[in-house]
Amino acid sequence: MADRTALPSELARRLFQIRSVGAITGAGVSAESGIQTYRGKGGIYDDPQHGDKTVEALSGHTLLADPDRTWRAVGSLARQAIDARPNVAHVALAAIERSVDHFVLLTQNVDGLHQLAGSRNVIDIHGSIHEAVCTSCGALKRFDRDELAGILSTPQCARCSGPMRPNAVLFGELLPVDKVQRIHEEFYEFRPDLVILAGTSALFPYITQPVEIARQAGNLTVEINPEPTLMTPQVEFSLRGKAGEYLDLIRRAITPD
Ligand code: OAD
Image (tube, rainbow, N blue to C red; front, side, top):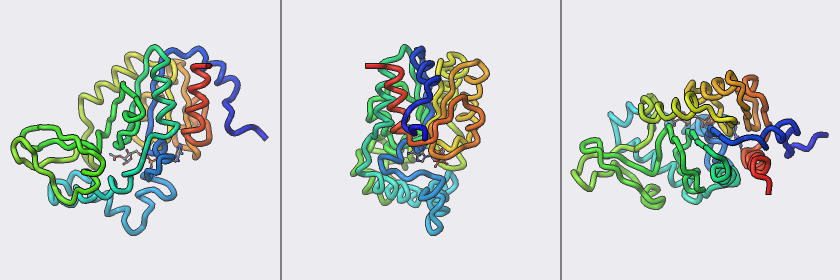
């Protein structure tokens, strides 16, 4: 039986040549840190009692109608993730960034674990659960973990007392235009040698298109996921396993000791 934790030899050989990397991540990359995914077994949407309620509470329309409810849901998610620390997958991506000529990380995660692990050039397309922005004056506030976990109602702006909202894209809301522009620059105009898709069900066009662009350009595309996804037939190499395991192997292949 093949060793599940080894890279295909053809992939290892090609990784040795790589000088620029674009990584695209989702909730599965934080699963090994104990953070719940959205879909699949044990995911937020899979919870028959609370799943729909969580999604509704974290939506743009609830924020308008009942902002305290949205903030209570944010506090509840923060309490579940209060002890979460970066795992091997986050650390491997930060190490890859330090060793190649150009690196970009497009993440759908709002947990801040990539940044905590040391990733620098990050497009956090869905924002950050650790930040709030004032809906009146635009002031930004950063929460520490304990503060966020204790939130039970809408925080007020320290500058103008206006109501604050999470600095994250809620369900049903539009993506920030400046971050969409950065995706274009980093994946459509620059075109990294290698595009990695890790720990995401890859359902959104702004996640799948950079992979398709790389494939069309003849660049290397790799998926890491324990389950097949809609992108599995689109990538050159689909590695069936955990992000921590395979990203660490990719790190070692790109930067041999
Ligand atoms: P999902 O929950 O949709 O998908 C998580 C993926 O990670 C699944 O394909 C799992 O098979 C895979 N997975 C689980 N454990 C893994 C592991 N240890 N290593 C690697 N992969 C693993 O999460 P996302 O794709 O991130 O949007 O979801 C995308 C967006 O949908 C979220 O950002 C959220 C949600 O609506 C907003 O909050 C706006």
